[in-house]
Amino acid sequence: MTTAAGYRFSLPFDEPVEQLEDQIAALRALPDADRMGEELTQLETGRDAMLRKIYSSLSAWDTVRVSRHPSRPQTRDYIKMICRDFRELHGDRQFGDDPAIVCGFGRIGQRKVMIVGHQKGSTTQEKIRCHFGCAHPEGYRKALHKMQLAEKFRLPIVCLVDTPGAYPGMKAEERGQAEAIAFNLREMSRLETPIVSCVIGEGGSGGALGIAVADRVAMLEYSWYSVISPEGCAAILWKVANDETNRSAADALHLTAAQNLKNGLIDDVVPEPLGGAHRAPDRAGEALAAWIDRSLGELEDVPPVTLRRHRYDKFRAMGRVGTVQDDPESA
Amino acid sequence: MSTKPPQTWAEISEAAKRAVPDGTWIHCPACNASLFHRALEANLWVCPECGHHFRLDAVRRIETLVDPDSFEPMDEDLQAVDPLSFVDLKAYPDRIKQARAKTGQRDAVRTGHAYIHGRRVVLAAMDFSFLGGSMGSVVGEKIARACEAAEAGDLPFIIVSASGGARMMESGFSLMQMAKTSAVLSRFHEMGGLYISLLADPTTGGVTASFAMLGDVILAEPGALIGFAGPRVIEQTIRQKLPEGFQRAEFLQDCGFVDRVVARGDLRAEISAIIDYTGK
View (cartoon, each protein chain N blue to C red):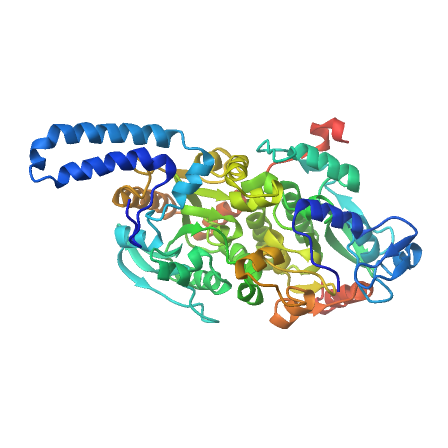
């Protein structure tokens, strides 16, 4: 698969599929391609069967790799696909404009919304500008500023989460990375307008949660969401991050969409097209738009005060604790 | 000031052992002075030679902060479960058992009512020696309940943070404690409650990025490491050494994120004065 940056990229477990894709493309390029209909259909059926087999049993670590596929659609791609009349709004009114978080007015279906999403960058230049989706404090402050604007005019908020984590650098620390995220968590819990948030790729820790305290939280099928990246976890708990320990950490963290749903930490899983969103971005966009539409539909008639009470109750109830009485041995 | 903060679990547990060393003579890690145990204790575990603030476990923290024998603990029966059956090089339940045996604590925070210079407060004191003071469901729940108790009693709420961040072994559940504690503090804030956040060495990660940075007044002990990312992670990102004093309490005050750096011996007077100013 050729990426936006113009290089070929395939995940190791996708290689047999890529070979078939190459054959299909070669056949299609032949001058008498229309006479190859039967062979083409056969190859395509084979490819789909192969994809179904690979993607129905992806390991947690392989899911993480799909979530980072360079051709996977990002916030700006989804905005182009599902949103009309997007009016980007820049800047946090305090320090600057962080390209790692994109905000703006837009129309999704019949609704006017405020969109807030991490942007990792597609080309090398954009990736560097966006710090690979790792936002600085001004990004989180911009996000909150635009969310408060939405609240003032009763626009629902749509957040798209896609970050390995908030940026860990000197400037970010000096400008209060922790305070910026903490303040978002506190303020999002009390905004009086509907908030829906979907993890579209990577949901890394506090940097993800900083725009994910929402009435409805979903994950795309092959995204991940966890307290730390598998590599970070492996480096600390397994003392070294390599392919083997990354796999173990990814398993241990229960970071897949299905696992987060099972644990009650998210509300929905948005299915992706066969073989992942990068194979058919349009259909991923349609699925995402359908989820946004349905979720906002469920929330639109809820009085704002009730809305925020429900949001509060939902996050207040999260966590699993026991007592000494459950486990007398530990007394 | 003190040496570079620990990053790996092995280092953290070593550092925790150093935090309150046993034995009659104690070595100051900052100035190498040999200090008599009793003298150090009488000085609230601050080196009389150089002012280095030793790390305190929750029990000693409470002893040094509140009026004698005034602490009434709450929710002492809460303890961690292992919702993900998490196993790394060790199983999570084994880590918990070891931490309990080492610290005598059930988890990484103690909460309860207390008096500070005669003013009734709700206090939460984190314990860095318990799995690096990491926040899992128990820490989040105890902080939330303590905040609710402060709200119910219209009392000042004080959290002494000392934590490496969210607890990895509860993954998403730990992450959501950041949202939970922030939401509870949001309500407390709206109700007009006074929340004083005291940052002790070290306060990093998900704890800093949630309740620790949400204080109406944020105090820090001298030299405390305070940050979002740990120093080693930042050094890996920027591929150079961090300057001396980076992410220390005084630096945070210069950057505008800490109201006051207060020496341990002055904390009681400081906190009671703030309570009086706010009329709580």
